[in-house]
Image (cartoon, rainbow, N blue to C red; front, side):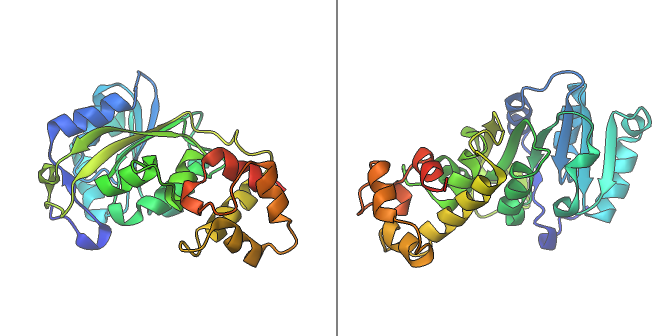
Length: 257
């Protein structure tokens, strides 16, 4: 079973890393877990040991055959459900009740996966993802500078890096190290309405459109009918503030109009 570069496959080989991922998920018996890209089933095996129900979505047909044989007994007793599908086309509406996402995801679609499930009507209660270390650090804003990515995650949940994984923990060995990120308390409670949710992302994208400009200049160029001087004054924001220095609460306030 050779990893396919076209599918962004890097199989996890580290038992300590695998155990750290499962531990971070706070998994208990009868939890429903959505695993994305199970690969050869190393993480899957540990998830099943926790007596959780595991739904694994795998795009690679060859791996579906391999996993079907490896976990035949778990499939038979319905603890393990294996689906041959592109995760970006999969609907969480098919899952009954609450669920958690626990996965070593393909790094080339990390952003797309997070956007899809965090913004979905049926959000997971928690997400534990193995991602590139640099991406994880951007999400939690280790340098205290926000980005479209960090704000897009924080507006839905609370991200935290819980474990660092050396690049030698995979086959084939990637060029960069990785990290396990845990996103808890996922909800849409930060938004006053669907319109507010849409406007938030619109404002954030415009705000970061020209990083060298101050935030108010970017916003004035797109939303001319809004009195941005008044908005900034009411929210105690300096007009010289750049997008990366504005916290989540202020982004939510200035996008609620």
